[in-house]
Length: 103
Image (cartoon, rainbow, N blue to C red; front, side, top):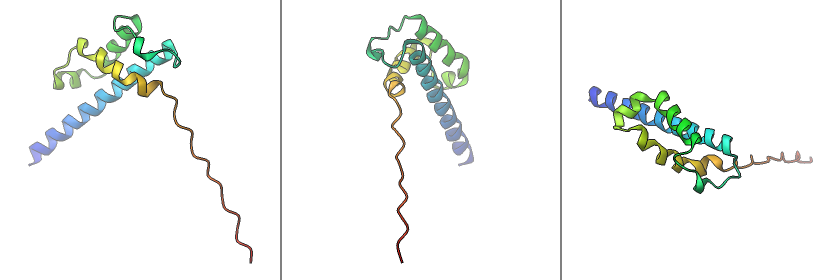
């Protein structure tokens, strides 16, 4: 059971690291081309995508080995992250304190 738990924790750590690296790579593309750009038209052969792929390869080589990924596998995964990264964050809710009750 301890071996299984350790392997599962290791796989979870690799998956999380890969997802973070892909999200960061997508974020770098958004910064370079602008959040208002049409994310559906990002060319996988662009210099921005090449830099993003290279950043993932450099950041998580162990995760790539673990999941059998190559650099060629990364561009579609980065593209899939673009819409979520390009969307502006939702505004924080405004909390209004209630007036104290009158006695």
